[in-house]
Image (cartoon, rainbow, N blue to C red; front, side):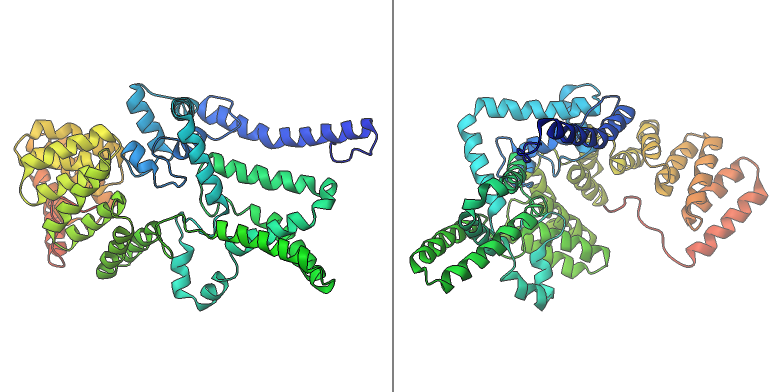
Length: 472
C-alpha cells in the first residue's frame, strides 16, 4: 500500500488488508502450535530468548562459539537452554518462560554495559558483510580442500567480491531510489536481523539475491562509464568499491581456511567411520587453531581413551572441564576414565556431579549405579540404575545392570524381567543369557535355565564381552 502511492487510497487500504490477512494466516498456525505444545500463544520459537542471549552477553563475540564461555557448557540449544534456565531458576519452566529467562539476561547485560553492547553490535555488523563464511555444522573451506572447482570459484564467488560490487550498484543507481527503496529496506532489515543475534554464513545467505541485483546493475553502469570515457566518475566509483572491498575482506577472525568447528566435526565423522588416527590428527588441528576450544579437548580426550592412551585422555578431559566447568558429558567421561583405571572412589563424585549438571544424562546414572555396585553398595545402586532405564528404556546394558543388582538383592522376579527385556532388545547379549540362566535356576526353572546357559556358551564362543564401563 505504501509503495503504490499513486493508487487510490481505498485500493491501497484493501491491498494492505489483504497483506495483513496473509501475514495472519502465516503466524496464526505458529502461535496455535506453541499454545498446543507449550501452553502459551507465542509468535516466535521458544529458542528466541536463548538465541538472543547467544549473541548478546558479556562474553559474546558475534559468533556462536563464544556462548561456551558464558555458560560453561558447549551449547545453548533446545533442551539444554531449558535445563540450564530451570537449574538457575530452581523450578520447572514453560517454553515461553525459558525464552523470557534468557531474553531478560540479555537485557540485563545491555542495560549494565551499553557501550560494550554497541561495540559488539558494530562488530557483528561488520561480520555480516565480511568475506569469511562463518561455519555452522558444515565448513565450506574444508570442502574446498577436496574440490578444485570449489577452490576456483571460492576466489571469485564470495562476499568479498559481491559486497563491493553491490555497493557500487547502490551508488550508481541512487537516482532511482524512489523505485528501489523497498530493496534497500529489505537488505537493511535482513542484515540488522542477523546483527541483533549472531552470525553464521547461512544466516546471511538471504541477502545474496538482493545484493546480486545491485552487483549486476553496478557492473552494467561501470561498463557504461567506460564506454562514455567518464574516467573521473569511474575512478570515484572504483575507489569507493575498493574501500568497501578492503573493509569486507579485512580478516576479523584469527584464522583463514577451515575453522576449528569444521575440523572438530570432521574428526567426529572420521571417528564414526573407524578412522581413529585421522580423527585424532584432525581434532588436533582444531585445537591448534583455537587452543581454548573445550569441545575439541573433550573429543580428543575420548579418542585417546578409545586408543588406551589414558594419561593423554585425562589431560584433555580435565582441560575441557577447566574451560567449560558445567560440561556434564566431560564430567561423566572423566569419572568413567578414572573408574576404568580402577579408581572408583575418584570416579563416583564425577558421576554425581554430571547428574547434578544434567539429570537426563543416561550414561552418568548408569556408571554411578555400576560403580556403587562394584563397591558393594548394592542398595544404593538400584536408584541410579532405575533412572538410567527410565531415561533409556531401549538400553540393553542399563537393563542388564539393573537386573544384576536385583539378583544380588534376591529380587529374582524383577531380575528375570530386566534380563528378559535386555534380551528382547539385544538377543545376542551373552552375559544377559547367563545371568538369566542363574536366576531361573534359583527359581527352580531348570529347563529354561539350561536353554539360556547353552545360548550364553554359544555366543561366548564367538566373541568376548565388553567391559562393565562403556565408552562415550
